[in-house]
Length: 392
Image (cartoon, rainbow, N blue to C red; front, top):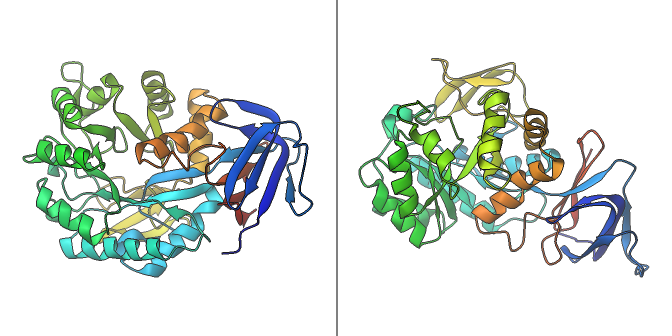
């Protein structure tokens, strides 16, 4: 990949980790941010490429989607290099610059194949699409009662030996595991994951509030697509959702598409968890970007109508959400600021999966993963490591 030696973005609104700069600049060299400031950079090398932002433009950090199955006709579980590459190349158009390809509950052999494929593509990345920064293992260690769109016939009880085999096939790339900690062997797996720096996420779980707190004590610090695929709230047993609400050590994923969670419940979650306690995800499937029609997820037929994806029995089956639309919806549903919504889509996931030292905010020393938004928050351009990968 040919990378510009020096770039300067100037004259736009710059959203940094600490503040919003009304008119600022970002200086990039060799793919990294080297300076961020207000006004104009005093000395500019004549060989520097200047990117002049227009009135109303905003420069934000690239989004990090830590829960995504597919896009534009391709799925991680295809087990094909080309599928993973096509997903990667499609994501900068929605502002996503890094992602965790996400598996689904399937046969062990199919899981191995998908994990091997992602590891292979990760090794050969050339920077022309969103960067693979790990893998999200969703299933098979989940509760059958809360399977959702996960095929029940392939569900297993939490099993450390099986996880270690998955991790070996993935070349140690698994960063996050969705699991039901209340199942037999769950607490032991949570503890082991925590000891090796892998995030244990409570999801597709029937855990009571007490079981959520027990899982958190063992090291579970994340909740997969909050509300969906888990025990809901009741006034005599607040369930998995209530347990997550009551524990500020647990970060909650949200699919903010207006389908998986009502706008009112998104607002309640925002007031309960705050800007630091939420990670925006898409949980998108291969139908994203293609419109209504018949598709497939984990070997199951999926119908998409009005951009809503369903199994034959009416179960929601992932989303067709673009990350920028999740950001816009978050602002609309909660009246949070753009800075807060961007944080939920960039810095919060970066912190969760351990890449905040180089990604997630516009900060000197980090990768130049940058997105230019217009006044209507539409994507104008996306840069990865200072390299233009998408222009509207």
